[in-house]
Amino acid sequence: MLRGDYKGFEGKILRVDRGGYRIFIEGINREKADGTSALVPMHPSKVEVVRLNLDDKWRAKILERKGAVEEALGLEEEAEEEEAETAEESVEETSEAEGER
Image 1 (cartoon, rainbow, N blue to C red):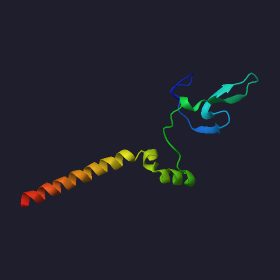
Image 2 (cartoon, helix red, strand yellow; image 1 turned 45 degrees about the vertical axis):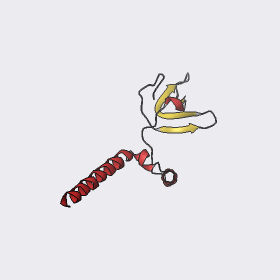
Image 3 (cartoon, rainbow, N blue to C red; image 1 turned 180 degrees about the horizontal axis):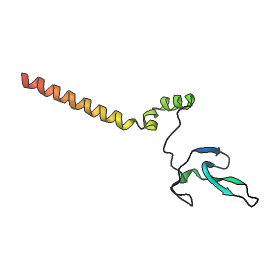
């Protein structure tokens, strides 16, 4: 949660109300007058998604199709670092080859 009474709280999204444009997060409950607890609806703009659950094969396939799997997994940075290392190695090989001439 980024804003509001529950700022700083982290939890899993349990339910999405697409009609009312609200999400319900695990652990954010309010006690009702009769003593039972109820989930508190949150507006999605007040929430930051930190991790995606990619156990669902359909979701993973959609993200893969859009090219966002690496971003979702946080592997994008690692891929960029590997590309930079590969580029540095090829530059070193090129400079060594030129030095031999």
